[in-house]
Structure formats: C-alpha cells, structure tokens
Amino acid sequence: MTVTKTVPVPIREWMETEEQWSLLAGYMLDGSGLPGPRANLELAESFAMSFARPSVTETSWAMLSSWALISDHEAAANDPREFLPFCAVQASCAHYGYADAVRRTLTEGLLKTAMNDSRWRLREAAAIGLQTIGEYDFSLLKGLLDSWKAEATLLEQRAFVAALAHPPLLKEQINARYSLDMAGGIMEGILSSEPGQGDREHYRVLSKGLEYSLSLFVASEPEAGFAMLRRFAQSGDPRMLKIVKSNLGKARLSKKYPDQVADLLTALTMC
Image (cartoon, rainbow, N blue to C red; front, side):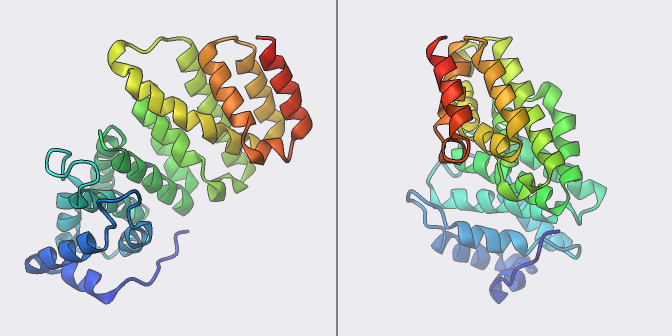
C-alpha cells in the first residue's frame, strides 16, 4: 500500500480554491528545477502523494486534470510549465487506487496520452505513475497492462517495461515472472516486425528501455531470465544481440552471476 507522505500545507490549501490555483502553479514552477537537466523529483513526489487518498475534492481533481492536459505546444520540453503535467500525471496515478470508476477511466486516458507524449519527461511521468499503481496493488497494474498490451504502441511498450523495472515491484516472485513474460512478449514482437520509417525514433526509445530493464527482471528471476536472454541471443537478430549484450553489461548481473554472463557473452561472439 502507498504511504501518504507529509506535504507542504500550502499545496492542499491552494488546490482547494480555484482562485488560488495560480499560487500553487507558481509555487511548483519556482521549485521545478526547469529549465535544467533534472526536474525536482522530490517536489513532484510530494505533490503526487497529496493525492494518495480517497477524499480528493472535485475542485482539486479539476485542477489536476487541467494541468495534466497541458500539451507540448503550451509547454515544450524543459520549459518550466512542463513540470505541471509531469506532476499531474503522477498525482492522478497516486489517487488511482482510491478513485471511483470515472476517475480511474480518466486517469487511464491521461496515462495513454503521457506514454505517447513527445516530451521524454511526460513519458517518464507515465512510467513512474504506473509504478505507483503497482506499489499500491500490483494486480491493478497487471490489469492495466494486460488490457493494453495487444494494441500497445512502441512508446507504450517502453512505458510497460520501464514501470516494471522497479525493484520494490520485483520482490515478489510472481511479479518478476510476469515482468519477464511481458518483456519476452515485447521482444518477440520486435523480432516479428520491422519498424517503419516513422517508427524508428519510437523503436530507439523502446530499445533503450529494454537495454536496462531486462537485467532487473533477470536478477530477480535468474533461471528463467537467463534462459530468455539465451533464446533471444540465439536468434542472431542484431537488435536482439544489442539488447542482450547491454543487459549483460549491467553490474547487477555481471557481478552476481559472472559465469552465466560469461557463457552468454561467449555465445554472442559466435553469432
């Protein structure tokens, strides 16, 4: 279950009155850390956790929804205003476990939009939000991913693996196995298709996600995990080889399972 953290008093006060929304927006923008290489993740988390409760008023929800819908035309990447939808997407997910059906449906729409956003921070907000849902109740996260995976875009698939590559979620063996299966299905999808010209950037983003996330899944479920890596390495597909090799280079595998890693690296040189 998600533990509600203490948040600055003005946040809850200002969100409850529409006339004070601008004060809260100013507070968030001043503390955003943008423009810059790193947004204020601590402030974003505190804001999100203020929604991790059942008693979120319609006024507060309306503010959250309006922030979440700020587009890349209104707030481009690294613009301080990008911080508002970045926080709002995470906050809607923090509320998801407590929300009614209407708000859950709205949050799912916000997640879909964020997963496919042109701004990498919004895509990251979606992944963090999914992790928050999974920490509250993994079955809720699983239900969402299972309902979306058949028609998932490349960017949505990236969000899936990024969300699952979260150590707190992988402590349970059943969750680690689910994550391996999800990643394996995505890898099979790559093998069976060739991204079109317009998809190449989206594929690059997905590949980057797979190049680190598999190592977390394998470290949590090594027997099945290394078997999966071997299977994709044996495909000989250059895309698979790049993903497998990158994961084998991660310390969580190379230090804990040096023999298995060395064996697979030898097999890679023969492909």
